[in-house]
Length: 73
Image 1: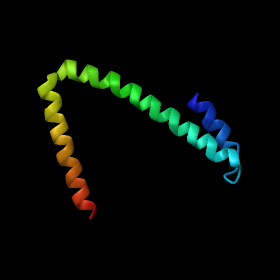
Image 2: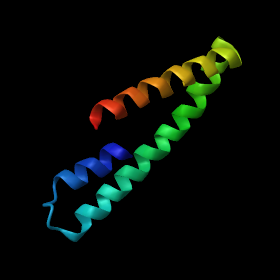
Image 3: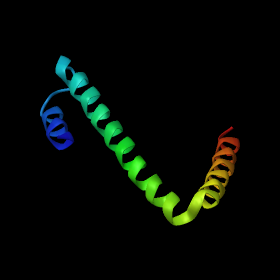
Image 4: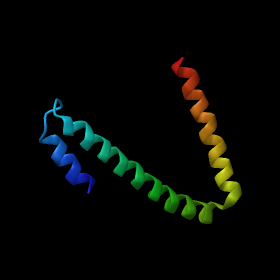
């Protein structure tokens, strides 16, 4: 579905009214797909790593994110 929307958008010029609408639809499709995948992946990860393992990864992720934010300033 997202491939179809992308191909339709590519055949339009950016000045067309529908171009922005097609982009909005594409973004919505991608975000929905990401949410679905996150549910599946996170459930599998928690099964494999356990609650403590997930918490440890989340802590490490947050620390790295803070480092990056600090370096961007």
